Length: 102
Image 1 (tube, rainbow, N blue to C red):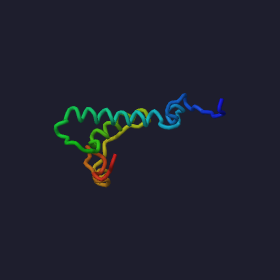
Image 2 (image 1 turned 60 degrees about the horizontal axis):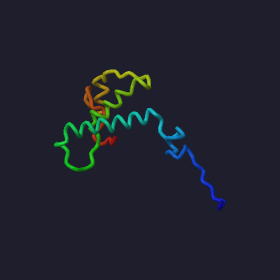
Image 3 (image 1 turned 90 degrees about the horizontal axis):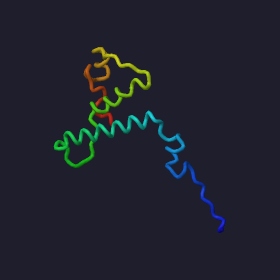
Image 4 (image 1 turned 45 degrees about the vertical axis):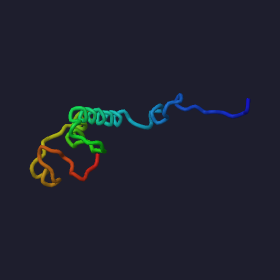
């Protein structure tokens, strides 16, 4: 009656999710897996964490990556010692430097 209109996008849901252009399912899967593993870590080792902000432990971040490799058709091989030396990590990992923030 007053001439005002509302255009409703994505049935009122978050547009970037409802219109399927915001977050591909692969990205959401890796993000949610990180969150779940972080919650399990806090539950299992809660006494080791004082209140604060923490970075996900490298071994958990790399576990998430390994769990998702098949989806993108990738297979990991063992690093050769010269490769590990070149990037400054141990052959068995973790494979990212300490300054890397997940």
